[in-house]
Image (cartoon, rainbow, N blue to C red; front, top):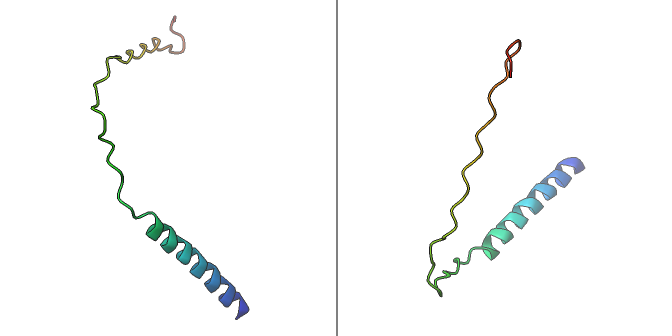
Length: 60
């Protein structure tokens, strides 16, 4: 029976921590619209083409 009490206390502690964390992190996110957002002028590079496949008994 003490084992069940220990497991119950452990499970209850985990549930309590999750509830407290949920309640403390329920604030609404702050909208960061102070400055206008400009589109990026940097264009990402195109990925390099993969090398041709080498099959057994075929010249690479």
